[in-house]
Amino acid sequence: MKFTHLLGIGAVALSIAACTTNPITGRSSLQIANNSEILTMSAQEYKTTLSKSKIISGTADAKKIVSVGSRIKSAAERYYQSIGRSADLANYSWEFNLIQSNELNAWCMPGGKVAVYTGILPVTKNDNGLAVVMGHEVSHALAGHGNERISQAMVAQYGGSILGGTISNSQWAGIFQKVYPIGSQVALLKYGRNQESEADQMGLYLMSMAGYDPREAIPFWNRMEGASSGSRQPEFLSTHPNPETRISDINRDLPKALEYYKAAGGKI
Image (cartoon, rainbow, N blue to C red; front, side):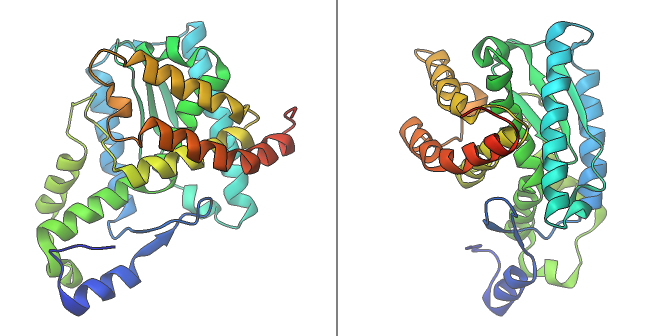
């Protein structure tokens, strides 16, 4: 980890003290922000975004969002319980909503606040494709990518003052709003490529644990790339690894994913 605005021993001490390890992928990241504050502000931002959107409810598609999301949620809870880390998800307040929009997009706020746009449904095609998307987005939340991005912004902006705990509430709010622009649906969540790659891997495992076929991930990502051919790339793909790298990584992770799938009752 390299943060150029935090100097000397302070940077080393901060990195060592606040490194968090993902229990599914093994990746470590700097997460120094207060998770309770992140969850509170995420819930507020989610409510604001929904209030400015057309929410689809009661339809077959809307019910599918809730069904697939709930299965992935339950799979994650079982896994975290099995490794003695149920406390990681204790303060989650899950929601799954379908938003009317032509954008090929979906996202999950910290704390399990999920939104899927109707524009991506023709690309997902079926429950397995939808599970690829929702598993990926839920993984961003579970992996603490929001905390990681906020932490990076805190270090970049305030450097060593973080060690003394001198960041005010207004400064903290300003950082959060830069990371998650209020009311900005499409640009709401922009992660780095390392985070996107981790969400690909973790999401593949989560969908498999939930009983969805991970072999559907490659056809889905191919369809997503095809949907962007000859036009502006969807926000959903803007910071993802290039297609060749993603497919190679999925093939690397498929054997383990299929083990989870088989354990969940899937047919190999």
